Image 1 (cartoon, rainbow, N blue to C red):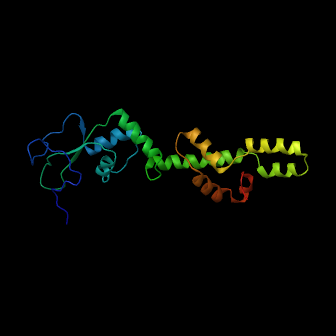
Image 2 (cartoon, rainbow, N blue to C red):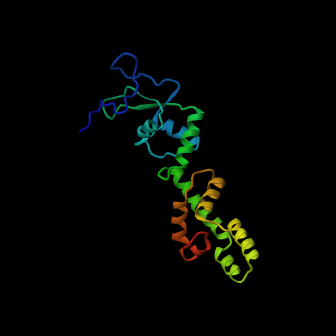
Image 3 (cartoon, rainbow, N blue to C red):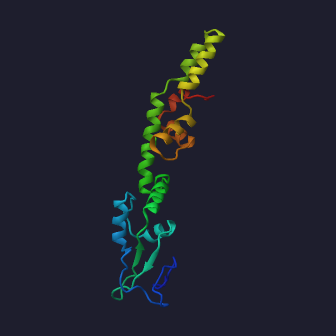
Length: 191
């Protein structure tokens, strides 16, 4: 059984040892106000039960307030983060597939990967053309092939540039093997 007076995140209390804030300071928000504030700033959070962990992981200052009545736990209040901190949290969430925002971005990445792959020319077509070509024509076709065709790495780079988030060739490989497995020969460097 957990101790109701526990303070797992070493939350700030009033200067006098052992006392909690009687009233909420102006630069602090309650859990409901804090979630509304974060959602308004495009940091998607829908549950209050993990809010202290979220605040602790993102170095947001928290404090305890004196609870009204005997029932329930001691309420936690959250200091309003700076605009710089908000931007930092958004950047972290966009690149983390386990957050609400990260899941939305992941779906956008998958769509963009397929869009880039589908619009790229087929590398195998160039190989066929090179079979019956002279040495000079082969060289031109090879250069054209390497310029226009896509590899997993080049697709990942294009997705990064288009969406402004991290993308790697493992994700590209995973998406293509699930959605376009029969067309993987279209890519460069396929054995």
